[in-house]
Image 1 (tube, rainbow, N blue to C red):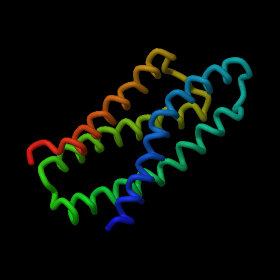
Image 2 (tube, rainbow, N blue to C red):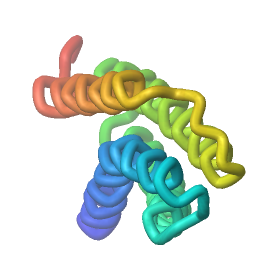
Image 3 (cartoon, rainbow, N blue to C red):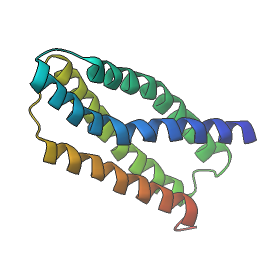
Amino acid sequence: MDWIIVIHILCVMGWVTSVFAVPRALIYWKREYAKTGEFGPTGDLTIRLYRFSAMLAVIGVITGLYLAWALWGFAPWTHIKIALVTVLAVHYVWTGRLVLRARRGEFREGDLFLRIFNEVSVFLVIAILWAVVFKPFT
């Protein structure tokens, strides 16, 4: 069980790093594209980061659900965590759509939107950590 916890934490750390980094990278990619009009190294890095972290997200969710079931018996606080992780996953999928559009050279969102969009994920992660640490309703 300890190894599953370690794998879960490592995968979540990698996924959340991307959740924070990709929207910011989109800002730099947008600026680079505006200057050159071409798909450059920032775009390549952003796509690779998103793809790699998608795999980590899947492993993190699977191990997290297993832990919620096997270790905590789906205690009430795990329902809160699962709901918040679901919202974060929706945010991540939305980020993926932004990456796919950027790959086609479509940058519809402005810098301010992307910065606010990025901060939403920070608050979600703080809420997830709150649920894990304080385990409300137990």
